[in-house]
Image 1 (cartoon, rainbow, N blue to C red):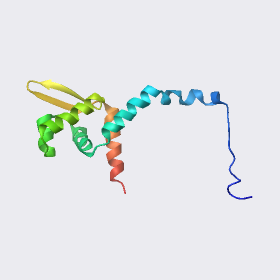
Image 2: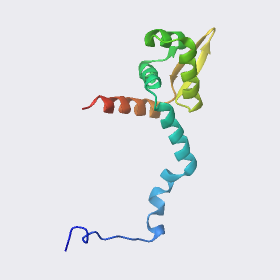
Image 3: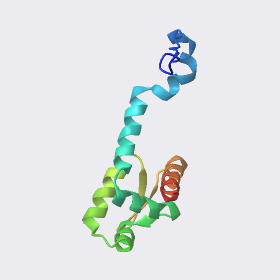
Image 4: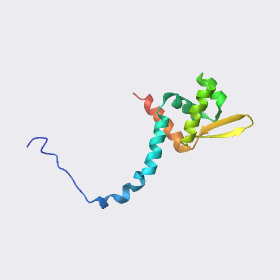
Length: 118
């Protein structure tokens, strides 16, 4: 018997596993998650998010630290805000950004930690 013929195809009724996986497979949730991952798929945006893991920052401070121009940073933040990755608050003339919630903090931290492992 060759190794190819050892492959046995298992089948089961569709309703046997329905309860365990439905919550993870909602198409709307998957589409939102895909859009979020797309927004995270840019090294400049990830550098920006890496700063916001530490603390809330204003746009000018982010641009200065990243040695980038304000319009570019603002555009990145707008995209990240649209995907609910960052949130903001106004204080006079300043706009301060932070990561939206602990899920995002964990996601960014895990991605960057994982990238740092060899």
